[in-house]
Length: 151
Image (cartoon, rainbow, N blue to C red; front, side):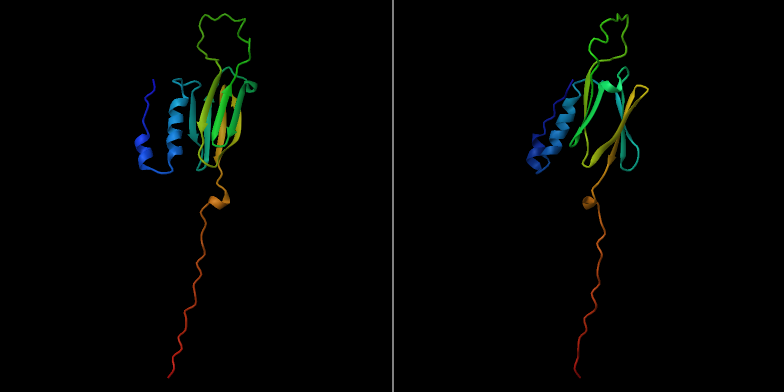
């Protein structure tokens, strides 16, 4: 169930924030009502983050992690016909294909990914370029000007 939210009043009262409202709208629509696969987002340090996804039943060759600009895309494609010969009495492990998108903040980069014990861990780090970091400006004191007085 999706509740549509109208951002029109905010567009009338702000200038230059349309990307923020588009981002909020895309995040609301991307889940499609499913929570598969489940995931955690962890803060691992001041500028380090970690996404941990439960991808039970997927091999590393069936998973794909791609970063394009500020979007992280994680997909899982099961091998075709790998389940055709099995008859299940109960199937509680969802092994279906998936696509999960994450919007990343500026200057956040994927630094690594690993698969262990059915958990896909994606390491992220914010790397701010030197020209964007705050820097101290040296203040030069001027010598006091002398006034010459005649007597």
